[in-house]
Image (cartoon, rainbow, N blue to C red; front, side, top):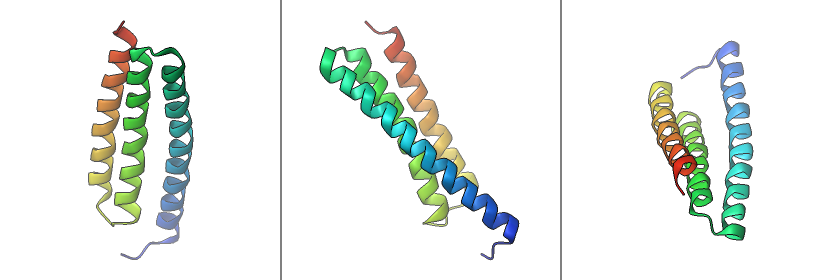
Length: 97
């Protein structure tokens, strides 16, 4: 597939944004897990898992799109499904005791 300059710029921006999501999501996941280890609160463990799933979804979608040349629509769908699952786990963590 030949990329025009605009398409190349879009791909570069997607990679930059996905990298930011990976870094920030990884930090949030790490600090949530660290808080769980310090307190033993299961809700914090669920919070870490939820953010981890969301971060993994962004990473996986980026890999599928840029490295494995899977269609953008499939990458977006996988990212959306894992984001939904991650938010469901985060919601559970906020309501669990």
